[in-house]
Length: 275
Image (cartoon, rainbow, N blue to C red; front, side, top):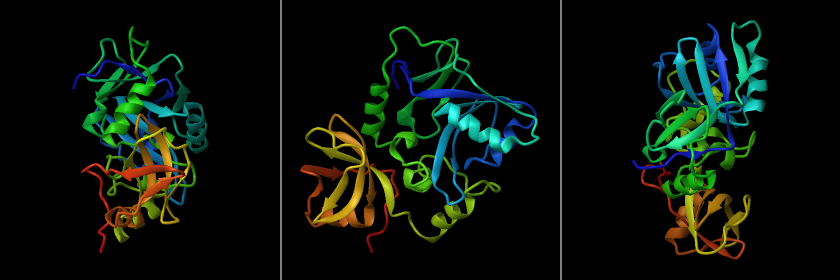
């Protein structure tokens, strides 16, 4: 994949160091990092007890006792992690001297680099000490991920309101249903066991200016979802798939105000059985 480095300016880096660094995260994140090999990255989220989204991060393992987290809202996440530290032997440090990049491959001199574990379309995620000359802007990354139908949870979910599985945490390798306990595990596991999640972040297309974030999507006067990020005729919306897809099948337009919006779920998205 040929992708020039893109600087993700909204992302920050947190370093966790010490013998309890991994065990602290293991009890908090949806992802199992207990056996994560050095030199790799894994995606996980931190949830409320009700299974709703708080933060997500890519966890890079530099050594057995040293981890880097690539996340949006690094200061806030570091404060949240510190609440759970108690007597654990771990230091939690925000690293403003480091930058986060997306690229088609590893970048020379990078402190950490790994294929993005969420989806091949996202290339490599890199943590470096400086932005390479000529690096692209974050809007380039937004355009690329929207075209692939991939949400960015910090941009496309409402904190403490939307469930993590609505953000495609399952489809994008962000949750391990076989690991031990973490905050929000009971609700997340129950949603997985009982039924296909019916409300999800879904790629949509439109032929005008992007509807504003949070705009209601309606079909025949009934709300079927809410708009999230949009750019260049493609976006992400939080859709009730069991309502939106039958409306599409029946030829009923889905409208965001006066803008016609067409759901376009990627092939890898798990959709509910219409029966």
